[in-house]
Length: 139
Image 1 (tube, helix red, strand yellow):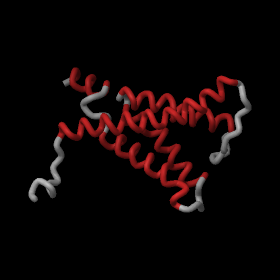
Image 2 (cartoon, rainbow, N blue to C red):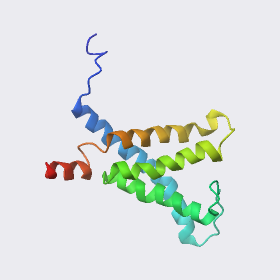
Image 3 (cartoon, one colour):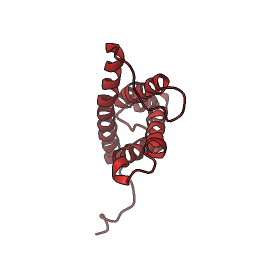
Image 4 (cartoon, rainbow, N blue to C red):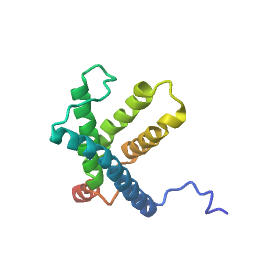
């Protein structure tokens, strides 16, 4: 029973879980970003929400940056804390502006993504990442 309610953190398990979470969220978000990138490369017209009033095209490119570049950085575990910020902001904009007034069930996916990005912002990539490798060489 004592082991079940233990609030300590097992670093070995934590590093494995961070690896799985990082890979999972990065691959999942990359699928969204690559579809957007494909739209740009195909030359099709960009029709996208503009919740911040900076223009559809600029908003679209910012979303591609967050979903492709930042997801790739999360995938390899490089600059993880910084890379988690743009997709976190993207999810918060969707929740707070784009889907404002909608039922929670309509924004549940974005909420869960935001929680994952917030966790990675707080914890970093863990041992099994380029950040972890660099940190081990600096020490």
